[in-house]
Image (cartoon, rainbow, N blue to C red; front, side, top):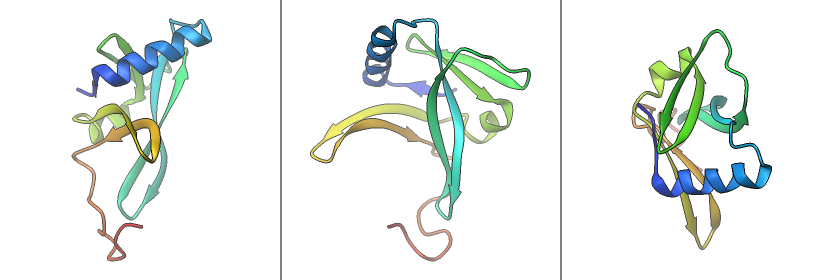
Length: 106
């Protein structure tokens, strides 16, 4: 199961309130592939497609394609804030690490 941390859930609920659309779910999707593995993206969505799976964590509804669920079933979504800025961080412990192509991370 994918965990949405309490901090991320709080930020997401604030965004949903600002949009005045509390019924929206958070869609997890493949945003690209790099040598360090699959890169995931997030977007609000109100449509559940035939090949989607749904779940909930910390009061946030999640939607993703069933193909993603098999490779991202143990992940987490967090909200981080530091000297470089703030944003959502997607962690997938089953993804390959940096440098799997031999080039390292940049």
